[in-house]
Length: 221
Image (cartoon, rainbow, N blue to C red; front, side):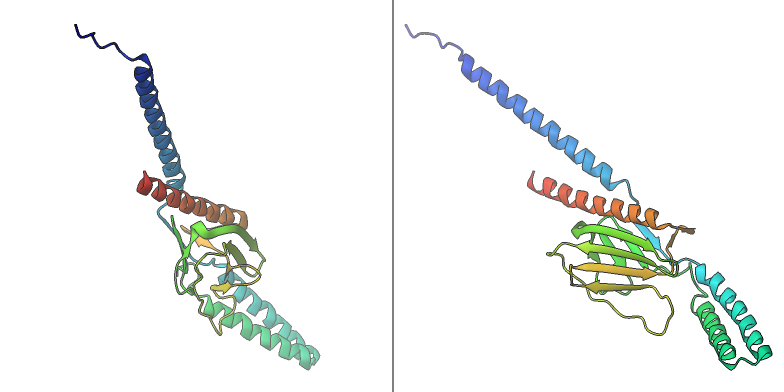
């Protein structure tokens, strides 16, 4: 007689544990994917930025006040004061003219992966951004993005003969960084404060890092 085959409890246990492990791993992977997608979807696919309209107000104001200084210099016979007033009037008028289209021209864009500025030769990979600093210094808003040492740096085009223009600069020392100067920043018709701009840059940087991790996870299972 051939003995009947007996079930192997160790084999059954191993199969059960293997199935549970696979299910747990798949559930964990799905959870990570969902969390990464949530981080990515916190920001719009693209946000566009213009400079603010501050110099459409300040330019005429400077010219008007300087006109008063000029007349005061003429009245008192102060030649130096007169010429100083004339120079400031010309400065105010030039500033007004140069910024006549403020708030209408897009100079910077953020996507879920890249930063694009019209004076940079190529987009900047936001996943390479390690530190963000934004300061509104009254005359200009300065954004500084420090990048990893492995980041590919674009080149920048210098804007000449314009006061407080929108300008991005690429610096390699002391650390790779992008500096963006502009006469304030607006998006959707609203002027952003420095802390709001920093938070928005941080959210887009987080989205770019999440997108990079998601791509790796999907490509490698």
